[in-house]
Length: 193
Ligand code: 5GP
Image (cartoon, rainbow, N blue to C red; front, side, top):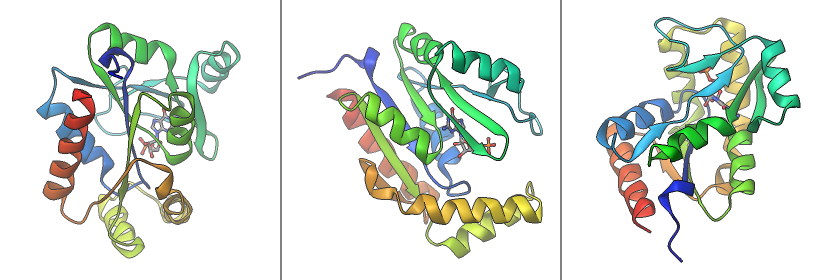
């Protein structure tokens, strides 16, 4: 059966710091005509140069919970203590209407929920860091974490690694170039089917 590209979904998930955002950016830059970044709703504050409506739809907890009540999300999670993130139904529809396939960069639980809802039309990638030590080093050198939030992210990463077999493809990100190229080939094959 051929699936209309208008219903397809691509998910990249990984423990934070595994490099999924770098791979997501590359895929989007390589295939702007085919893929579009699914902009999530989030209740955390913007970091650095992040813009509302580009990186996230930043909103208050009240606004977010109101959208939960109105069933506006495909999935949502409290990814970090008190911080909500979610994929809006309207966002996927916006991208499908533009004739593209949404690329979701979301956490492991959220990815599993999307996959359960759209088992026939989703292609999922788990980006695996070479090791927990390497992950720790990457997060540390990113310099955006406090000691507490670094520890929280590492603990969460160890837990998330145990779910890697729930996804269609596991890509070990030892070398970004190689991991990105491998992901791109699999994405292109999925888009063709
Ligand atoms: P950050 O705060 O570093 O931008 O993102 C933290 C984590 O939340 C990342 O793992 C990111 O992939 C995840 N995330 C971003 N958007 C969503 C979403 O819509 N749903 C879920 N479940 N996780 C998300």
